[in-house]
Length: 402
Image (cartoon, rainbow, N blue to C red):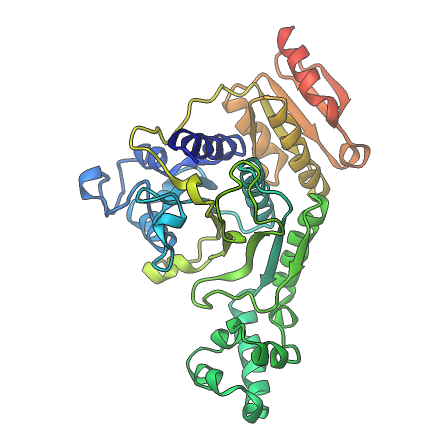
């Protein structure tokens, strides 16, 4: 894989992230309001890696330090991360290797996970990987985690003598480490143990069911992995990995890649570790595609994009599902677009569209979702027409000429 090809991969990842509504963390920091900051932003005072290369805990600390909450919500950001200590740089593109992360901050609803999946899977597939699938689990909210911890502890206390010796110390230190153990004896024993999803509160259960419904609507293969937990002090609710059944990259067949292409989850209360009184709903995913992370110093973080002429509006849960498919059709048709899938109220969506002075709206409601259609509205003369979703790029190009 030559340097130019790696650069193209990274630029394509940025382009895809931009299309689905993500903005550069670096550019976002530049537009932060100057009033009310806990710290004045200046590159010289930034930590190593900030604002481009930053890990997730530092991102949420920056959320407080730089008053990200003053910006229009939600925030959809992309940034790079330093490699983890266990990752060998030579396996990830050399000395300049980084990881590519996507974050959605300020959205508690399941559409946030769906947007992350759609964006990350598009990046992965267009980087040459085939047959991606998702392993997923839900830890639930803090009440769910506490409930599961009690049930899991009680189970293991009753069967302590059967627990493999290498895992017994973890019962007292961190029971989640017991779940993560991949040795055969532990795996067999854990099959009979309580599962995190069985302890979910009603709210957490509904959220997880919606996430799975989004995956099914996108025809993304997935399996529930009851042992996928991460750190219980870090993640809440959804946690996931994107893997591939085919480890060979069709663009770079001689390179070896980790079968786990991306990892992520919700970290709604991570910000409280840094002094926040309330949770800030947030979910993110980190993609590690070998040379994808190689960013030459002259590479611009934010690529120039065409000004959108279309704003996508949805009405209802089913419409959100169909809107994800419509977004991909429009992207492949090279139609620049704005969307507010994270918002529910139509008045808020229309207000945003009008403030941006976007000439056309695409509206998908419950009726259109069932019919596989969409309404195209000309904001100048208020005329509108209903068209099949598959033909949206053609109609938009035609309308734009009028």
